[in-house]
Length: 387
Ligand code: KIV
Ligand code: ZN
Image (cartoon, rainbow, N blue to C red; front, side):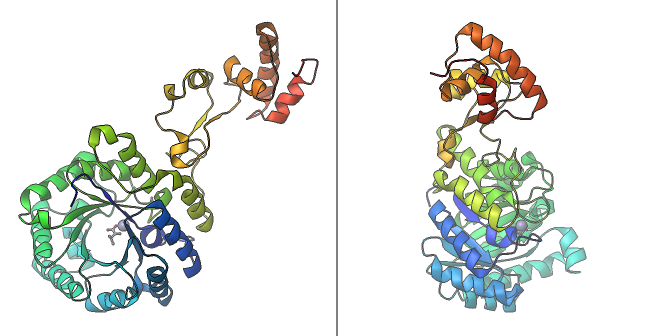
């Protein structure tokens, strides 16, 4: 394994699709899966086959339609779930079963009414059983974020010995702080004797708005698979957003030296596709793909960005598939932004004229949220020359 390669595991069609109102038909899921393949994700979690006949069928059809990424199916740690997953994956060229069980004392006691030893045995048995069907088995230690590190390390060592190829350390409830989560991954790296036989995966939820930060903390401490969704959709406050992690790794490539296979120029298109299909609007200030992610509206920033784009842009919008950034005209805009837009519309003004037009522009802008091209034409309609 290349130690600088970070594998991208997309769970938009499983953890993302669990969100109320986001359910997709099999045909829609195939369309998203194909776009994920073009985007360059390494693993597509296509569903949870035992959960419903529709989900089972979607995993079957995605397995047929997509050939490059590994197709993954989720199970709980029991034979019926694993049988269903193996069956649903039968057409996949490259397949993975993702099985697991709760690892925190909270889950062991209140979800399973069980003991640490019993849960550890069930984890090992599930991995061994899944390995009868596929060579690639990912184990998830649910609620690992709140689990005792010493017990978690024992569990991870045991499942790797049982044949797990990837070990997923989910912060299921989005509880951890980045330094705590990073330290947890480091603890496993330092204390699981066979850890080099598996890839460590990070799966973070966003309950405290820390999913991306925690994912990065995991990567910095040795995780080499990131589990994410497009636009960060997912249970409750969502999962780690794929576009954020992909662009962090790209932007900091020189410092971190880590690579993904993501073709970032396809990010904006798939963000729109998922948002439209799942009827989940993207918040305007969402990093990377929000409507305002490349929009400049204050006079100081507009002046700076017009002098040199990188004064206020650390990302190139073209790199995520957005044609250009935008300078929005509002009552906070300055003369430089106004001149820029007037010149774009072919109006040429000397300094005196610009001052005069700017005063009238401010009066107009105070009445409106945004000034459009039509507003500018109206503003220039009273006497100024259009070249
Ligand atoms: O958040 C979680 O723990 C999960 C597991 C099923 C991987 O989604
Ligand atoms: Zn999850």
